[in-house]
Amino acid sequence: MKAILLAGGKGTRLRPLTIHTPKPVVPIFDRAFLHYQIDLLKQVPEIDEVILSLNYQPRRIEEVFGDGAGTGVRLRYVVEPSPLGTGGAIRYAAQGVSDTIVVFNGDVMSSVDVKAVVDLHRERKAKATIVLTPVDNPTAYGLVETETDGRVRRFLEKPNPDEITCDTINAGIYVLEPETFDRIPRDVSYSIERAYFPSLIERKETFVAYVERGYWIDIGTPEKYVQVHRDMFDDRFTGGLFATADRTQPIVSPEARIEDGVTLTGPCFIDAGAHIKSGATIGAYTVIGRGVLVEEGANLHDTIIWPNSRIGQNAVVHGPIIGRSCHVGRDSVLKGQSLLGDKSQLTDFTSIGHD
Image (cartoon, rainbow, N blue to C red; front, side, top):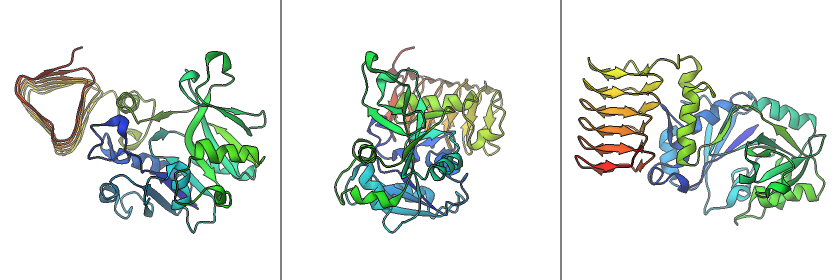
């Protein structure tokens, strides 16, 4: 069995962070995002290869994952010749594959039991199975209605309040049979959500839903990117280093250097190679990436800092996301959810944002 991760998107909603870092490899604590999806796929022992469907900056993704030796699975890279949409990307990546395929959109984090989804798909002899997840505000999403026996009835695009009949949305996780891909045109953009799935309903093919009521989030916006870190700190999602860590305490790599006189308040995370100088304060919900330097007297809280950045003396950083290899000058004040793209340079005494 194969799996396809749709990892070709540009991540425009996360810019400027994704100008040089494709969304599938943005860091979530100490690991690239796709590691968490690969961990889920490893629930299914039959999956012997994970195909990464790429388009935007494919070489950067290949540099992170290589041949997959560090993930425990075999990886294969397929680069779209041009953006083909979700359906077109699946057909292009699945060339030569005849067995059942598991597909993940490249921006969803979930606690779904992938093996249970595959088991349902086989039990129902389905042509396609879609994972759904309930949401609190259905008007903000396209909804998916199901019959009492779990078959998908129809899709509703962002309904008005008086049109809401359910609270379940497409979670971006599918189990598909390649024999149905002949309806997907070659080498043109084609949507699995707007064209392929409706065609299954129109042809009365077996198309069933698996409702996942556990953790689910789309990390594709700055707000959601911050939220997934907070959720892991708060034990709403378990993965990676948080499988065994005590979240109530600061989580500090043994390869980080913490000088005397530093104040650490959990939950927070400090990765390998980071150096926190005397008098600095690292507050709750702060994530400090590999190789980051935090100088004397700096005060950080509720902030995510990507690798190899530098925070100057007495800087106050509360809330931003700071990209790779940035420099925040001494006595600067950054507050609120501002974003600094890679290699941003802020001079001393810069002031941005407010509480």
